[in-house]
Image (tube, rainbow, N blue to C red; front, side, top):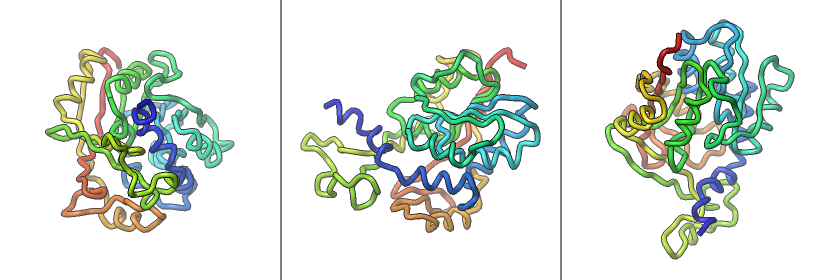
Length: 267
């Protein structure tokens, strides 16, 4: 039973291919992601010289590539990630860069002081988690001014599980497609692709930080041709595609939004 409860974590541990891909994006062997370019442009007006931008779920530092290209003032960029090979990929990509660090860190219990970072970003992580209540509370706790998220937000909430097997996902070699589910119906390994309603999202933010200002920005900044091109850049069995102008993974429409949360009474 404990293994089934932790199956979502196992799913990420099984995705060793991500470390290589994020590294290649960070060093320019693969193109910048459309989402990282948009994230940097949205963040640019709000970063002051000398700010600390904490990148929670930093991967291999692939968003940092866009931040450094777009943001004109100097900033430091610590990056925690809970998957061990991802901070190592970041260290490899950015070794020797000034004011850039990578370390292990779990969004459910971030190893940072209250209001330690001027800006906190967390892109493409929340919808992979079983619950967003504690993570959002932690992101707001360690932020001094602003939290910027990229996640899946819509008018309704959906609980979605992408089930892993050896047929489609590198690293899930011990899961034959015929045994993707245990006899009780639980998937043996999976990743969440959860969509949260704006009403629920707003309630979580208000509980964590009463009086915070919130803005939802639909991610419509992407070049559809670039998204389609990236689908063939690496051996991804389930890439993001464009269907009727919307980003889709497998059979799931992905309502990506950037969410900017401003802490109250902060200038």
